[in-house]
Length: 567
Image (tube, rainbow, N blue to C red; front, side, top):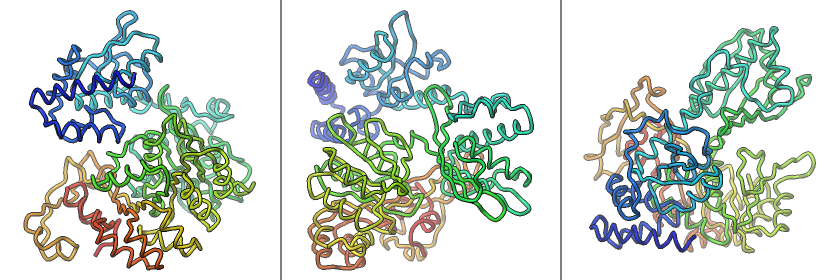
């Protein structure tokens, strides 16, 4: 299968060269890059604007004798639903178009992907026929198709709010209650659905003496969405505790639980639930854990090309340590999961120790640490090393014991991924030293450090050019020779966004431990010396990376100042 696919791939590449659509050196470079990123060549070519998507589709169709289709001419309502799972559609970028007897026709942009045909055939029991379409049109159609499948999100009427499929031992009993608790059930379900629709990351249920407040954290900012009567405080907390299988009679100590909300046959959302006894009742916070966030792919995270290459090169190493740092809520988990997804192949044994496991990843052995029974990060990591591992991920290096075992693993042929709570890459190295890890071990085991923040993206529908005086631009850190030509944008606000922003993008400081930086570490250099060396080696710090995002018009200068060290 693999050799066959390579032949087809070469055929497409040769055809593109023969048709003078791309130079041979460019297609070879693109092919190598696509292979290293584990994405189809067609996807890479379109994503990087190397070839027009429509031209590429026509060439692929001609080369392999496959029919070509214009998706915009078809009615999405007629596409067969629930024949192929969302996971398979996303994995292979294959859209089911129609079924004729035992034949299922699917649209793809890359007809060389024979593995997609085989896997979809195995899962559906149907004979698969492929048609070719343009990559950009296919991506839009797939997202539209999957949105329609999740009808429980968009078409949820009041009559459905108390019938959500929530995995809990006593769910049926609670949901069929026609007494005073029925409105509570419906209200809580509506809040959960609203949070998912708006892309919130957290929900806060907060009791006070004379008020009760519910807030959603969207794009990193908390916003109040409801003020139910304060006398419902106890019932709301009890309902959430029932859903997450907590002890509803215990109100004096914090508790933790989980809720799984099934939105459709192909999509489920997990909530991590935490209660806290406060002065006027129990505050309940839900962290929304969307499995799709772990499958975004490295291109969606916001790395600059040079930073992405450093990350992928470090992941490609057989041993060493990759550390991701930043405050709570800076996207460290998504970065780690993205790396694990790239590494997750049948040939590798991957184990993770997390507190707690946020998103389940098939093919990876995930362990929840449990300090009360003695299962901490160090204990789990020690056990991993007796289980023939290739790659291990430790949720956080909190103490010397965990640090020493992780360092030892990185030095003995294992790739180790972990996080620390520090503000920058240089501070991470000094933090390890302050824990008691010897400088020599740090310099010889740590291969890459990623410090990160999340900034809000400017809404593409309403952002406007910002007029900033040249003196102010230079004071912010822009070079004198660029202030004349630079174009920055500001947030405005419209019906499609929140205060001029929609979504978030990562801002990164990616530092490879070079020989020069390694020598400074072994000489017990401080964070300032390491930062100076990193800058001389060409690694942008968080501030410089943030300013680059402002240059690109992705975010505003105000937002860069909010999440990095501004002026």
